[in-house]
Length: 119
Image (tube, rainbow, N blue to C red; front, side, top):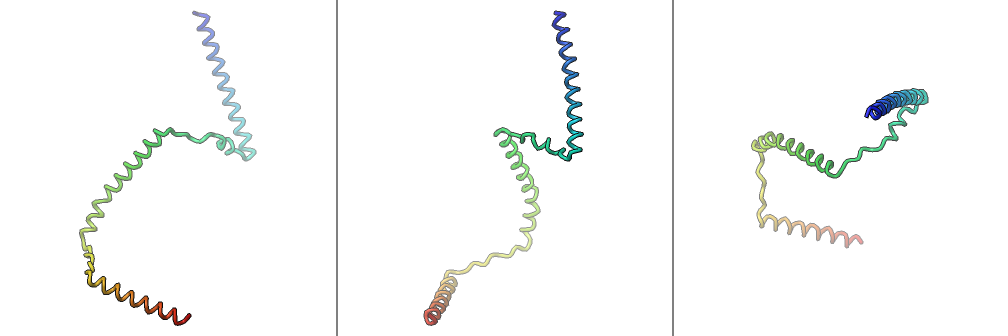
């Protein structure tokens, strides 16, 4: 049992020294990259963040909830503005619509007749 513990301690010590060497190498690489002017090239090689479908769905639902909350907060202001001095819509009678349609038909007939005479 003591042999296993000693082996484990030795492996942990080697692991620490290896980590220190990796950190030193990273620092040396970053110094050389900064001198060369390609310091951003290392970040460009990192992969994009990949999200699961469940995570995207949760994010979408959260965003929809935020927008709903924002719309609800702005509703009282909009409804207060609507209650003050809103002009009533003008409703045209059927006979008035018929008169306008007849006038437009006569107008277009006159325009078409001028076009035929010119040609």
